[in-house]
Length: 127
Image (cartoon, rainbow, N blue to C red; front, top):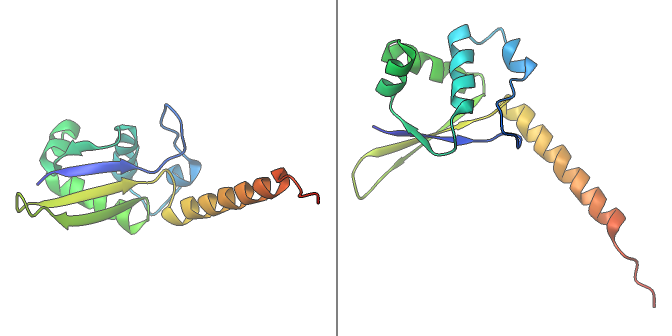
């Protein structure tokens, strides 16, 4: 089975590791390291559990455990679909720089700022 990574991050050409990830006591050091590595991969990076285990010199069960840990703690989302042409499952992981809930709050705040800026930039109608 092949997996894909989709990035949900702030626009930058480097991996920024947020303190909330580093200080999260619910994540193991291995899960933190895997998260940082996944963030460093480009969009649509394709991998298998076996290839990740080989790259990191660990077992497939360790990789699965780390992925599940990241999902449980909301740093990673998993989407699964069936490819009707090949019959294979396609699994997509979405990597977030911070917990999903924190990321959503940031997106909401930015959208509100955009709305306020649009209101401020409107040209009044004079009749």
